Length: 76
Image (cartoon, rainbow, N blue to C red; front, side, top):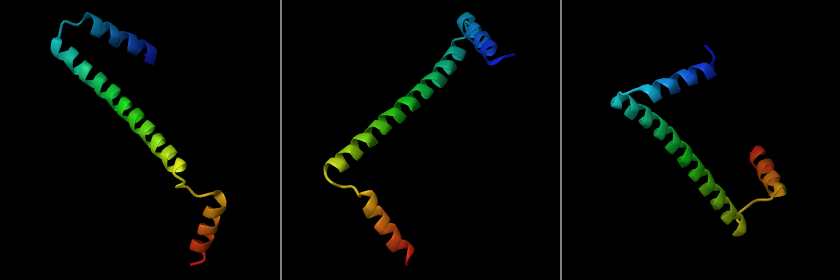
């Protein structure tokens, strides 16, 4: 059975079930996944905002500065 066929079969079962416990379990799984995705996106956006703030405050190194630092570190 293909993935699409499996999805259709599962959707059919969900639409036709009268089992409230099963529906609650499915909702729990789905909402947990959605919440995790939303948390990931929120954290990602927060980190981008923090990086922009650091750059705006001059808290960054140029490529040349990083290369000097690496050369010093490698020579130790």
